[in-house]
Image (cartoon, rainbow, N blue to C red; front, side, top):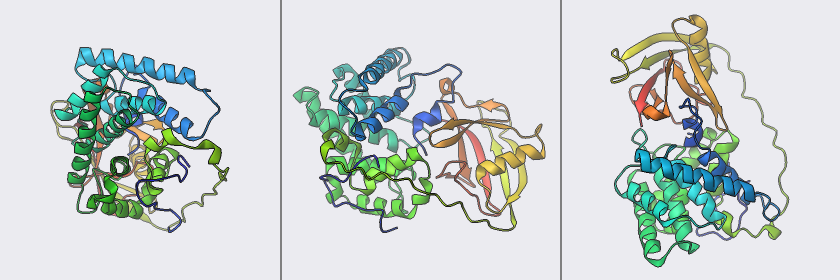
Amino acid sequence: MLLSPVLTLCPRRSLQGYGRSRWDAERGMSTEEPPHTGRLALYLLGLQATCPPVNPHRSLVTWLKYYLEEEWTGSQQRGHPITSYYQYGLGVLALCVHRKRVRDQVVQRLLTAQQHGKLGHGGNTVDTEAVLALAFTCLERRRLVGTELAAKLRLAAHEASRNMAKAQGPDGIIGNIYSTPWALQVFLATGECQTEPAFSQAMAALLENLEAFGTAATMAQVLPVLHGHSYLDIASRHCGEEPDTLTPLDMEPLPEVPGNKTVQLVVECPLPWCYDLQLYDRLVPVPATASLLDVLQAAAALDPREFRFHTQDTPQGPFLTQVLGLEARQEKRNYWQILSAPSTPLQMGIAEYRPPDGATVILRLSEW
């Protein structure tokens, strides 16, 4: 477990009653190797949560500082970080948890990006804004910035919390199922879980969709929330009180379901990347339990010249990077968006989502 049950801001929710970090999604989008800011930040957060010996990872913190400086230089040249504001925010959060200062100019640039709506990514900025809010709250509480800047960060974090509530859908999900745990962490970190109705509604939605969190990385996002924690609690762990309760878990395979199903697979590529909007449209027969990844593999097997795709392995599972020879590239700020027709974004990874019989799945090259 990433975080142990310690003092919480709100009553603890337990599992006993019962997409995918963005950096890993983006990392396959460029021919040049980007800074490993987001991945290293998450690793350092997880490492700190395991109560390691004193300073076994000082060199990793130094590397994270180096990556953030690379990002800072890139943001001055490009107007945005080399990777994304999400990754940059994760880097600032990880350094704060490790009690490391960040230059005021860096923090101010993140504030400006939030205030001017520059966080962007396919219309869903919940996870990015949530990560920034957690970083702001950490910096302010640990007094790693001056008094004036701390006041601005406190206001920005509460503004982000209000934005989380506004982004909540009628089903209780905030942004999408994978950004919902981030939003809940903001409510917990700011103390607004006690007064914000969106918190309990989002928690109920999360508990109804736990099957979406089937990998170690996505479990690390959701488990702290289910126990009433945010990543900020890592900084105040009492490691001497932590019992050794980690035990192996035997996962049962999914039961076999006899029969087959048919899925309509559509590939769309709008301007400015393509002249023809629809590049592929075909019924694909697959076994009844097939995932979307199985559907893609079956389509490629039907005619490799007509349909082909590539994925990038990430801690959250395979991420779609190329379809019909068209590669999503970070420098072009585009990605392969996956929709359930007509326009519902996919809430799971391609290896976890199992489209029902007769479903239409759209792979659309989109801008973020």
